Amino acid sequence: MSVLDTIEKIEKDGLEFIHNAATSEELDAVRVAILGKKGSLTQILHSMRDIPKEMKAEVGKSANIARKAVEEAISAKSEELSQKELEAKMSAEAIDVTLPGRVRPIGTRHLIANVQSQICDIFVGLGYEIVAGPEVETQYYNFEALNTPPDHPSRGLQDSFYVVDASGAKTNVKGESNVLLRTQTSGVQIHTMEDRKPPIYIVAPGKVYRKDVPDPSHLPQFTQVEGLVVDKGITFGDLKGTLDYFCKKMFGPDRKTRFRAHYFPFTEPSVEVDVSCGICHGEGCRFCKGTGWLEILGCGMVDPNVFGFVDIDPDEYSGFAFGMGAERIACLKYNVPDLRMLLDGDMRFLRQF
Ligand code: DAH
Image (cartoon, rainbow, N blue to C red; front, side):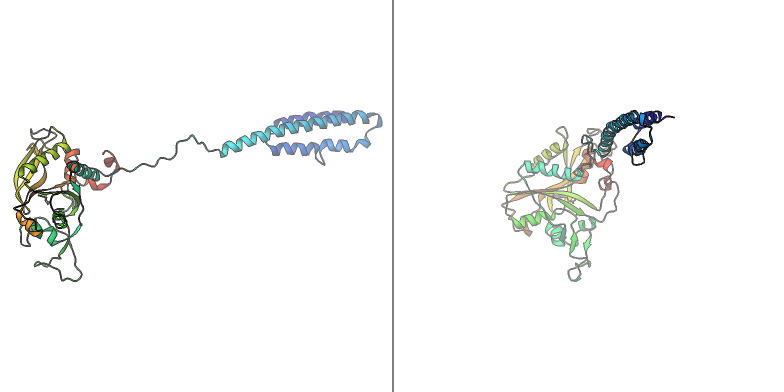
C-alpha cells in the first residue's frame, strides 16, 4: 500500500472511529492512536525525510489535510460528547421539585377529647366556667364532704385505688390510705365552693379511676364532666330545663329526655337522666336493651348537708349538680359498641371522628 493510500485509510478509519466513539475516553484513545506521539499519522509526518523527493509535497499535503480533518472531527465530537455527558450527569443528579413531598399523616384529637369539649362548650354557651380539680384526692373531698361518711354503703360501690401513704399514719378505720385516685369529679364541687362564693356556674371535666376490669362497658380510667350551679332561687325546674337543653344540643333536637328518681349521697332529690334511643326512637331495640331509653347522667339538687361542709347557707342558696361519663356519651352518640375501642389507639377507628 502506498503512503498516500495509508494516509487515506488512516483518515477514513479515524473518522469512522471518531464518529462511533461513545465516550470522551474512547474519543481520546482514537486521538492518541492517530495524533499521539506514536500515533499512526504522527509517524508518517515524522518519516517525511524517507519519502522520495518528488512525492514529499503531495504526501505532506495529504498528511496535513488528514491531520486537520481528524483534529476537526475530534474537536466537534468532543464538544458533542461533553455536552451529552453533562446532560446525563445533570439529569442523574436532578431533583424533581414538582414531585409531591413525603406526607406525614396529621394526628387528630381523640374522640374523648372531642366529646369532652363538646359537652363543656354547651355549658360555656350557657355562661358556665370550666374549672379543674386534682386527680389525687383525699377521702374528705372524694367522699366525706360529699355527704358520704366512711361507713356509707355507696363507698363500697366504687372500688377505689388508694395511694399508699408512706408514713402509714393517715389511714381510715379500715386501714385504707387517706389518699386515693378520685373515683368521681364530684370532689371539684367541694373545692369550688371552698374557693368562691355563689353565684357558681361551673363544669369540671377530668379523669377518674375505679378498680374495674376493662370490659365493653367499664374502664379503670375514664372521663367525667361534673357540673355545679349554686345561686339564689335555683329550682328543680332549672335542673330539668338545663339538662334537657344539654341533651338536645348534644344528641339532636328530636331527642326526648326523662328524669328517673335515683339516689346519690350528695343530692336530694337525686335523678338519673335518660335520652330517647337514637336508633329506634323509643320503640325498643338492642342498642337500648329494649327500653327505648339510654341512661346518660346523674344529677340532683345539692344536698343541704353538702352546703354545711363549705359554709354556704342553704336558706339563702340552692343549687343543682350533675355528672356524666364522656366515654359513655361518646359511645351513645357515635354508636361505639365497646368502651375499650377508645383506648386501643387503632387509627382506623379513631380517624372516623
Ligand atoms: N359522681 C356520680 C358518679 O360518679 C355522678 C353524679 C351524680 C354527679 C349526681 C353529680 C350528681 O354531680 O349530682 O356516678
